[in-house]
Length: 247
Ligand code: 1GP
Image 1 (cartoon, rainbow, N blue to C red):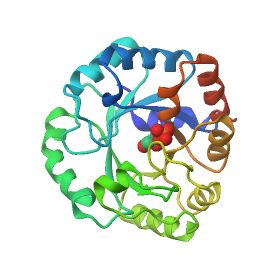
Image 2 (cartoon, rainbow, N blue to C red):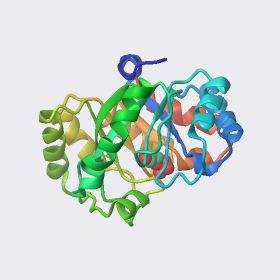
Image 3 (cartoon, rainbow, N blue to C red):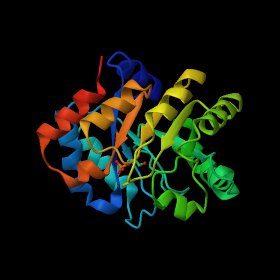
């Protein structure tokens, strides 16, 4: 089992780390296992597993198959309190802090907490900030929350500072899976300047240039999902990862 902070130390030496999001609704456990193998071969640092809906049953099967197929750490990235598995290395325990919907600020977390404790899953208290990205995203629609306007870096900073003061141990700037535009570099830089916490950035990142720009702006981890689902070109995946490992 890999601890999130161990992984963080490792990726900071390379500038930034690459996490690939695998959505159980996008394939069978075996298919996602093959993607996990490709990720490992291409130098990816870790995997996230979860989705907004997760209509597929059997998260345990997905995570345990992935762990058999590759050695990469797998962290859960749950869209709701039901997306838990004891086979994961840990869990991003998300609170949708940019929103004002109590269900996603604390409701789902209270429902999940006793099961997380019983499973012995390690949690990373993550302030999840949804950033406007050009169109309504699944997260925004399902959570019924407004994203932070993309030209309001000061608002993102204020949320990140509040998260730090409240004791969160990680910040996730999320444009939304399949977003038209990724999180602006200026916003990533502003949050980085004011807050020392580990910073994850994802949503709408499709090219090595975009990934590199977000990494150099101050992210500790870049998350990609859609582009990995859309291409089976291992050279591209390697190029994308190399652009994130900028040091
Ligand atoms: C979603 O940030 C991730 O939480 C991945 O987004 O699918 O757009 O790469 P994409």
